[in-house]
Amino acid sequence: MSSRVLPASLACLSLTWCAHAYSFHNDKQRATDDTAYTEPAGGWRIGLWKTQVGLWDRWTIGTYSLPWLLQTPNLYLKWRCWQQGAFAASMSLGAFATSRQDSAQRSAATLSVVPFEALASYQLGPRWSLTSGFSATSAKATGQFSDNALLGTASAAASNAQWMLGAEYRLTRVSALVAVTRVELVRRFWAKGDGELHPDDYTTVEFHGAMTRKTERGKRSSLVLAWHGSWENLNLRLGLSFGNYDVPGVHYMLDEKRVMPDVDVFYRF
Image 1 (cartoon, rainbow, N blue to C red):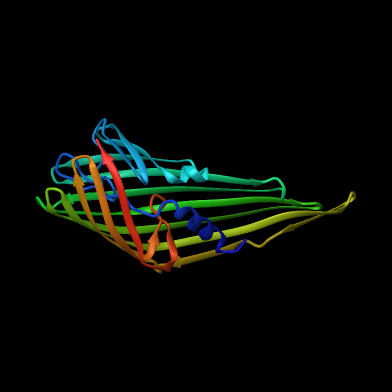
Image 2: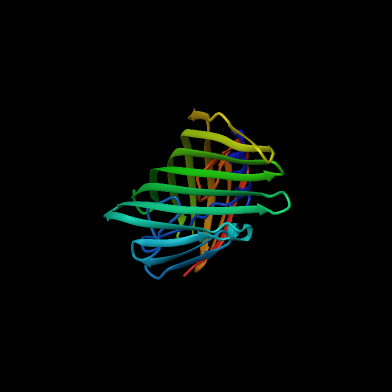
């Protein structure tokens, strides 16, 4: 299994998560994406890309919508662990999992992703707010295959750590400008394979592939610039993503640099 298998799998999943979601906010209803804030207790957000609800004042639980169409269950939990005055801090943990089976080819594959993020936000004044923090993501893919006399397994894993900085400037009561940049600090990858060959009923040949390890540092970054408007419960976001596209939710950057739209529509109530 080459070092491109796992990033390619994540890239396929990213097609279903092709927009970040942000929300215009005031002091009572703050933005919850890329900030330390959470949904208010009993508050709901239902949109094109994600659904979440405030369980209690400091806890939010949610899911990304479209991955379910690809049989990829996912869930995330966010805890605003501290807030005093203009400062707030939070931690969030998510889980994505998918599996595929091909009876005709007698093969199966699974992919699991676990992202973690810690953020701190500061309200500079009535118009400006800043957020900074770190995220770490661990992903693992495994596969099994059977071809007559050949039985084999292969596995690969990848992990990365990122630093982020975000800013929001409120233009009016119903519109805001948002900028978020992410820098990948380190990315690690490993892969290995094992198998058995049964040429006849009396012979078994075992083989073990050499483990491949690779570490990269500071090669990828992204920048998102967006305008956000709200009309009562309806929210609309229009923007662009530059550089290495960061897959929302899993925070895994693609290798190719590109410009991509950043669009979302959602309701908060």
